[in-house]
Image (cartoon, rainbow, N blue to C red; front, side, top):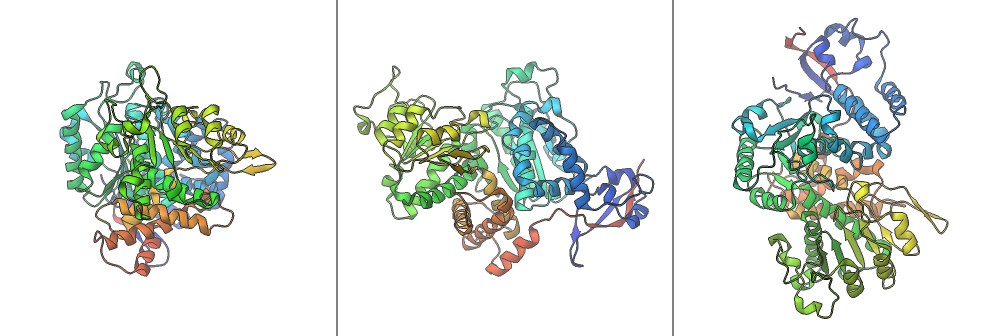
Amino acid sequence: MIFDFRHDTGSGGDVVTTGLRGTLLLDSALHNKGTAFPDDERRAFDLNGLLPLHVTDLDEQADRAYQEFKFKTTAMEKHIYLRALQDRNEVLFYRLLLTHVDEMMPLIYTPTVGDACRHFSQIYRRRRGLFIAYPRQEEIEDMLDNRPYRDVDVIVVTDGERILGLGDQGCGGMGIPIGKLSLYSLCGGIHPARTLPLLLDVGTDNEEHLRDPHYLGWRSHRVRGQAYLDFIERFIQAVGKKLPRALLQWEDFSRDNASHLLDLYKDRLCTFNDDIQGTAAVTVAAMLGAMRRTGRRLDEQRVILLGAGSAALGIATQLADALIASGLPEREAAARFWILNSRGLVCEGMSDVKPFQRRFVRAGADLAGWRRDSGGYIDLEETVRRVHPTALIGVSGQGSTFTEPVIREMAAHVERPIIFPLSNPTSRAEAIPADLFSWTGGRCVVATGSPFPPVEHGGVSHPIPQCNNSYVFPGVGLGVVAGEARRVTPAMFMAASNALAAFVAESPGAAILPGLPSIRECSGRIAIAVGLVAIEQGLAPRRTRDELERRVAATQWQPRYPSLVPAANPVLSS
């Protein structure tokens, strides 16, 4: 059964009509209030005797839940506890997260979600989302019909092949859509009932998982080539038929598939790839913040990116587009970037240059006299020595690759080096912030992909901003949903970057990114900026700014208990 979850806010408060009764009502995470059910609802919904006599409020429940949370000693235990709470009572889950967002966001997403994906089959407790498996592709439409709630605004989908920096996790990749959509609700205010996590199970090439007797996914090596593309096409057709107005976010697909699928479907449905576009948008915003810190201009930067996948090229592309918008010619803008893959600097003569990398390939004539290794490749240290970069960005998924010699060479030529080790989880970070401050004499401007504690250097405590996509994609999604946009465009992500950078500039004492407690307000600002671009581009109904602002505010769900009204036709407990 697909449930309607409709709110009536005309009376000044949320009112939900439901046919659930008794234990079925208590077992529904989006309806359950636990001990906060008032006496009249206990009688109306056959709950008398199923709950302790004392009626609590949401704040008291959140305090009790936090005390229980503190008994958990490891990050994984805390992650499991929070997920179990989400499965039991979603309103309480989000109220707890909002109250302790700095402490708990790293537990429901990076870095802890990486371990949760690796051990997904071992810690699996209760269903959430849809698993669409290749052997049952004839039944995709039926699977979509089995979604728990009828109206879906946002879908996050992965095939589990490139989870964070951990590689192929197969069906364990479902932890990413679940985590991302939790952030849509926590940070952006998208109602949890209007989100849908999806895992496309096309097998796995992770031999450890294939040998694991507890692995829950399809036990086959990955489907590739045309068969894979045909499966994706069938999935997209089913989504277009069943959920034509939903925003679909691609997440953690392989380097080649990520770019290809985005190019293939960006003009057919409302969709974007967070690894490419979300990562780029938050990094551009962080760079704009770094410009304020260093007193330099964006068009003065020389940028080296370690990593040549979809995330790196997304960052380079949006930064280059920002430079072009500032007046630089295309060729000069592209020339500000040096990109290295696992073998070395991407340049003419490399045999494996991908189509999406060609814009930033370095000409061989520009590299005459550069030192090369035995394979003929130019490494990071030589590139830094020759380029004297002002900014070094890591999206390689390889830990500790920003070595002391590399950073000291960079710092010898730049007064305020900008260094962003963005790979996550924490074990894959290209450098530790404390080392960067030590090697640069405290002169660096740092942002990381995973959370790190403040660094004490020279008697000063330096907070380390987390350059995380959660600053961008919830606001983009909120803007698309509230503004009723039909497509997602690069201009919307540029608007998101500028709105995020402006929000930081207005925040007293902010670093280059805002603190997590302000992320809901920040998402609202981004949503308005994105919605205005959608209107300007003719991709959304025409509205004034005031009308759009009212829609954004009305769309942002708040975690509080609604009043429940019995439906005419109850769903009876057995």
